Length: 240
Length: 231
Ligand SMILES: Nc1ncnc2c1ncn2[C@@H]1O[C@H](COP(=O)(O)OP(=O)(O)OP(=O)(O)O)[C@@H](O)[C@H]1O
Ligand SMILES: [Mg+2]
Image 1 (tube, rainbow over the protein chains, first blue to last red):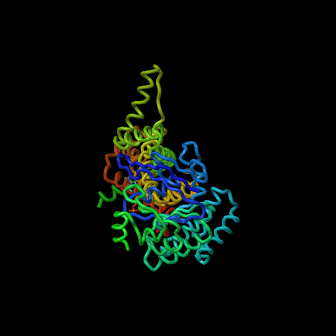
Image 2 (image 1 turned 60 degrees about the vertical axis):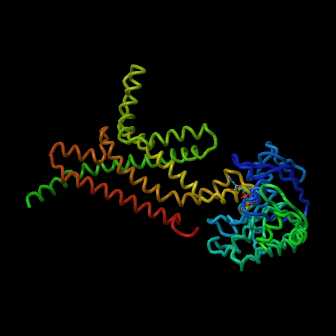
Image 3 (image 1 turned 45 degrees about the vertical axis):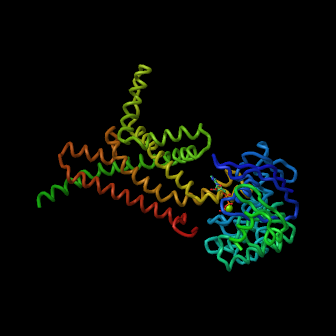
């Protein structure tokens, strides 16, 4: 589904990704952990080309998306992204937030888009908040709307960049539950998260990143309870 | 007592001429706001562009205008350009002062507007553009549906201040004999030497005009909901 080959990313002189190679299969849920600044966000952002890789190849369903001739917008239609800080559009209701891209990008009629948006808000448990603006929603609710917004494009892959780390602890669960449902429905997901419970329950694999490389990977239990690499162990000892 | 009476007489006598001047002032300002907004928006997007063909001319325009006095720009345009054309072609070339005034004020205001528009767009959170792009929206769609509606609310208040400044600064056009408010005051003083009552009247008419604009702007801001909602 996703195939990354020797991916490099520089910001000026700073080399943030130093050759990442990884394969994610369809329906797989991969969690990415690692210290701050290790390049987790940059890795995700390269996957939907919010950052342009400096070198290396990314294939999504066999298509080489790092080819400069490829239509970036077409790729992004298939790859949903959820951000740490939600990034909802503050001047639109929850419903409009979800309906906008299907209308503009997929060409859905207003009715079709709003119907789809209603269904998705229901799915994330927020059908009663359709007409509410983001500023009146809690963080957990905003993030659930953001997930619905990404799903409205019917993406094949969902990327989550620390979706719960900006939330108050009591709201983490509601967002993780939505994500678990999604995982169980068979969505292909790459999730940057330090939520071990989530990783163990629905994660197929965990990647540990440090200083721009994948240092260690394995099943959640292998990584969390039987890490081999010293860097992995010392990182886990700090967060667990 | 007789001084006060004579002042009042002058104020009454000069008033019709000041009103005629005020009409010119409002006319010049209105046209300049209109063209200045168009120029400013173009220059703002030019400066935000990644492409140097758009970026560099915009930067030169904005920096040149903001780095030189309006007074000098008026002189340069009204006297300098026709002089240049005459020297080059040998034909006498003159510009109507009001047209010249509108052109210079538009160009001048455009540069300030450009910075306001650009700052408004830039201060919309980066995450907004990223969210829109990550949904597959094009740059243009994201600008129109996501960025601009938020930027406009940030742009309107400083733009309003700019319009008020423009109205006041249009008094400099007196130097090229545009018969606007200040010039008509000056003409009256040159005949009567009644400087105080005339210029206080001129000042009060400007005050009335700027207060009028403020009212209109406050109304527009309320209509656009500049101060409500959205975080
Ligand atoms: N646009 C950018 N320009 C320059 N440097 C950047 C940019 N984006 C990220 N970096 C740098 O790249 C490095 C990796 O950043 P990245 O956000 O990918 O880390 P991260 O693993 O997601 O960290 P965190 O856990 O704090 O989110 C950091 O040193 C960061 O400062
Ligand atoms: Mg990050």
